[in-house]
Length: 347
Image (cartoon, rainbow, N blue to C red; front, side, top):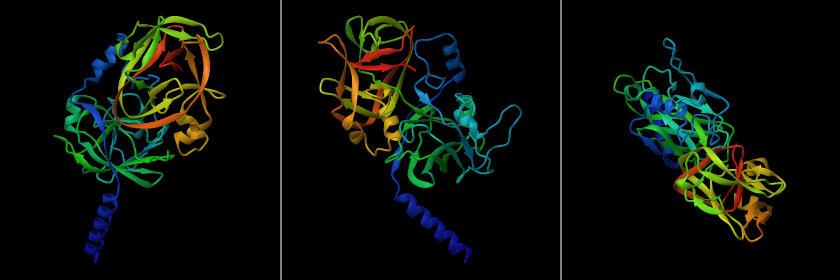
């Protein structure tokens, strides 16, 4: 009788999982030396990796796990390592086998949009390959099965979106398949976060009276900033910027302007100030961007009038794929700049 119950459970699990959408994460790198990456930050290189506190990411506020590997010497493997901005630490499950069925839970600030994850124990390349990595997760939102997530067997960060996400309070990632480590069965995840506040790398930024493509920008590039109160333009240098990849953007259009941005990139919305469409959608509990934007106007720079004006949003379209994006993290003595005519800000 016991064997019949087990077989029935396995068959039932297979049937349920077979009905879930499959999401395949993109990105990752074969070998990343995070010690060298940290030194780049100290040397103030042009591009700042997003995970080291840039304004482009939001990490969970809390995490828990079904099991955790006991500390070894000075190293611990607690769930909080998932959002400590350091890929050289990790959550490691605590079961004696490959951790199948073990899970961690996090409250993702932006829900299932543009999630970045660091697969394996990325303390070093040796640590990464010696320990096991996740091949497939079953993802839940507030206990509801949402999808099967397939990760690449790579270091660095990978990105993905949870389909039809209703922005749940808590997301659970349950291990259902692994890439075995060379030495140890322990399965690890180094970091998870929402990656945001970016725009398509082909976006034009106003600079010195011209429109320049952001792909060519770097630290020290001078761009035009704008004072919202006086409408006065002035030139200031970029202090930090970053390039990333995203799998979801929104295309926002007014009668005269259009831009492709991440759902949580800040724009100046009439009656709300600097905010994102995703934040407004969540706060107002509105089901779609199209419905949200019906009565919204956004601040833009009018070239013909040489001043700031509000234009009504006429269309918002969700874009799915793999997009190269750019973000301006800091500007010398300024925050507000103009991209494709839209007014935006750094954090």
